[in-house]
Amino acid sequence: MDWERLELSPRILAAITKANLKSTQSVFVVSVPELQNLTKLSVGDIRKMQKEVATALGKHEMVTALQMYSEKMQFPSQHQKLSLGCKILDSLLRGGIPLVGISEFAGESSAGKTQIGLQLCLSVQYPVEYGGLGAGAVYICTEDAFPSKRLQQLIKSQRRQRSDVPSDVIRKIPFGDNIFVEHAADLDMLTNCIMKKLPVLLLRGVVRLIVIDSIAALFRCEFTAKDSFLKAKHLQTLGAKLQELSSRFLTPVLCINQVTATVNSVQNNIGLLEKNGSPSLGICWSNQLLMRVMVTRTPHAAPQDYPGCVLRTMEVIFAPHVPCSSCYYTVDLDGVKGIDKESLR
Ligand SMILES: Nc1ncnc2c1ncn2[C@@H]1O[C@H](COP(=O)(O)OP(=O)(O)OP(=O)(O)O)[C@@H](O)[C@H]1O
Image (cartoon, rainbow, N blue to C red; front, side):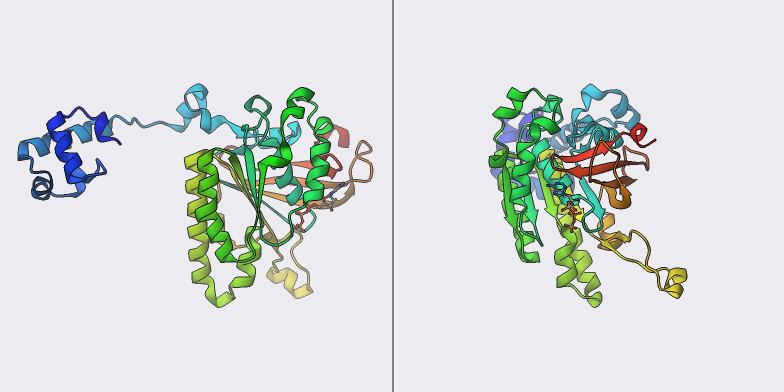
């Protein structure tokens, strides 16, 4: 809170500035004699200062979840979501990806995680009325090279994929120019990118989506089992910074994660691995997430409307605004598409 917003006399405000008291909360942390010493004000003035700060802080009323839910207009950021660029997938996620927090898409190889990340990089560039945020994206690759050719394919097919958006709106968006690609080959590069480069781009307002593909790759090769404490510390630090950036700039963070095959005791006896595996990085990383979605390939072909495509499932494992639920989807030349349950009957 700013000192200027408090109803204090110019004499007291001048003394505060001279004493270099930056935070209003410091009047409760520093003792009265110390404050007197710093500001050269009387005890009466110090008490007045404390009373003003206490009154101003008390003005922040508690808000219940029900109020947030029912008074949509008053809490736009809690209700606004970033669309996945497909009505069926958006309806599974109650509108899309929440603006504040880390959302994870985890799944086996070829499940379509990168395709979802790329589609979101395009979707974020649409105006708000079409589910976007009117800004670009940062795509951080840790393992594979950025799939530029596939991105160009997706850009070319935006008119087909986004038939809900007028073609002159699509034509005006320079999709390829608004995606900032960063390659982080090791943990130091990833940390440097998150701590230093991302804040600069976000401050300029050119970016409203961060995609990390994938978060587990670097942790897998840099830490052995006996470094678990250090690994947890790094994960917490990165998670906390990403959350801070997300909430400060109302920017969704999408982390793509791999799965680790787990063996339970019964399956171990007969030598079988668990079917879909569990998301990598364990409980320490799971605690940093707002939402976790699992994507998997099924052995079945998609319905006739999607010739040659594989049927995939998208399942919400946890999220504050969505119950555990799932839907089918597929990936074709135009991008990621949810499949209407009716068409599977
Ligand atoms: N041009 C295309 N046309 C049709 N389908 C495509 C096209 N490009 C990619 N796909 C589909 O997307 C799948 C690859 O998806 P993606 O690269 O997102 O997997 P992933 O989950 O990120 O895997 P990994 O963890 O190995 O990176 C392919 O197997 C294919 O089914």
